[in-house]
Amino acid sequence: MTRIPDAVAVASLDTHRLIVAVPNEGPAEITCNLPRPVAASVLRQLADGLDSPAGRCETALATGRPCPVHDGPASLSEAMLAAGAGAAEAFARGVRQAQRPAGLDSLLDHVAAAMAAEEPPALTVDDVRDALAFNADDRDQVLATLRDVLLDTTATRTPEQALAAARVLLTAHARQLAALVEAEHHETRTRFGLNRSTRGLLTGYSSARRTIRTYADRLADEQALAEGAANEQVEP
Image (cartoon, rainbow, N blue to C red; front, side, top):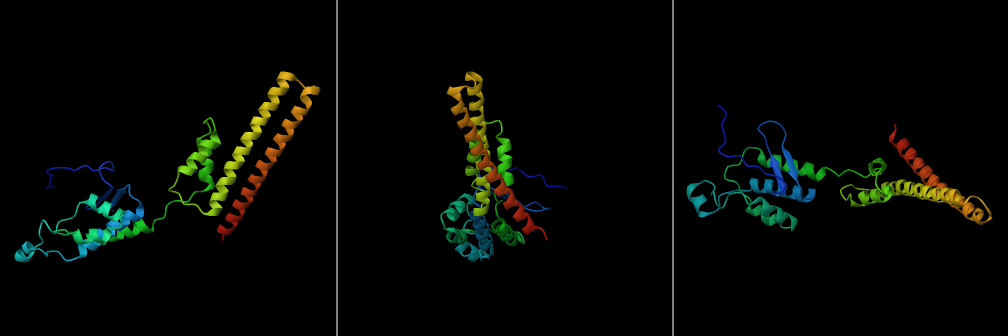
C-alpha cells in the first residue's frame, strides 16, 4: 500500500532561495535564484556537514543516538545567508542530520560540482540578430536591442564576441540612419522639387546616404569575414 503523507509542502522561489528535490526514482531536480557559485558552495557545505560526526552534546552521549536538537539540520535560509556572506565554513559546523539517507552526501556533492562546472551560455551574433528580429516592431529597434544585450548579464562574452555584437548592432544602426536620410531626401524633393535652391541640399542628402551605407556595408563585410574564419577553425 502506498503511504499517504499527512501533509504536502509546496515550495517556490518566492519563499525559498534553493530547492533540491530527490525523487525515489530518476535524477534530482534543482531550482535556485542564487548565484551558481553560492548555490554550489551551500550544497558542498551540506555534504560536508552530513559527513561530519554527529552526537556531541550530553543527550547524544547519554543515549548513543544523534540529538534531535543539536544534530538537526540548520535552517536553509540561514545557510544561504552564511554562504553569501562568506561564512560557509561556520554554517557547515552547524549542519547535522539525525538520520542521514544513504548516499545523500555524495548526491549533494555531485550536484554541487555539476552546478559549479556548468558555464553560462555565451553571447553569440545569432542571439543579437534574434533580438533585433524580436524588436523589429519597436519604435527604435536598435536601441531596444542594445538595451536587451546590455541587460543580459548572465551570458558570458569574450572580446571577439563583444566585437561581433557591436558590428551587428552598428550595422543595423547605420542602415537605420541611411533610411532616415533617404526619407528626408524624398520628403524634400517631393515638397519643393528639384531646383537651384534644393539641388545642393538634395546632393548633400545623397552623399550622406551613400557614406552611411558604405560604413554599414563595411561592418557587415568584416563580420562575415570573421564568421567565415571562425567556421573554418571549427571544421575538421
